[in-house]
Length: 267
Image (cartoon, rainbow, N blue to C red; front, side):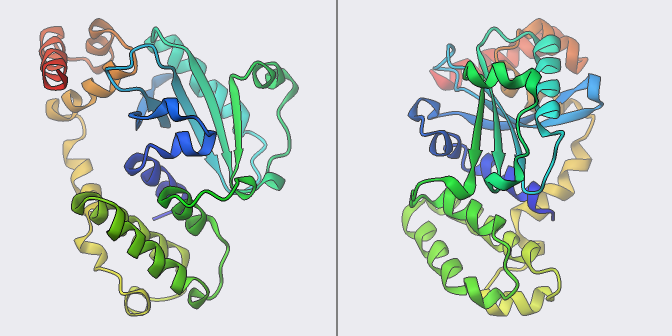
């Protein structure tokens, strides 16, 4: 599992991280998702959408990078504008670039500097964040840190896992512990899984929800059930039922029924 995939999983499980990184409590209740942009023949993996009860809250498009990437801003704005053109959400929006460290950012292209000055582009450097003892930020730092010897972070990992177990619900604890364990497996590819499991007391990777979800993902691809699961996400992003039905190539009545059920469940 690659580290960039881990970071997106962290945001998915802990979407409150957006507010912690930006210092903005107004993003409470947001969810983190991915969505297809057909013009790029790919998916946007970093879209934060507000909850149904906050219909006027903006969308946030995020890119995360931990190596030099001169095309990051181009990619971020290209994906954002293609999404806005295809789905036409009736919402304000922001772009968020998250860099592992400030020295990786080679500068904003001149043609996007106005967006930055206007506040539409927000930039976060993980190595410049003030000390905020949150589980999410500590987990981000753990994943990004360049470490050669696993013993250097053994105590930090144990402490983080204990904090998770003492702070979160049982179901959430299981999910975050799995992310921590998967981060360790990803960070030290030169060691066997058995060696790392003994050193950090990790669970069997085949037993984790991440592994099981990856197996199931391919089975749902293209099926009606999988498409209907995407309806709430699209609707929360401010997209009309008609456009959702068109983009997913499913019957409008099914989309409307799904949205109605979603609204009833949230009332």
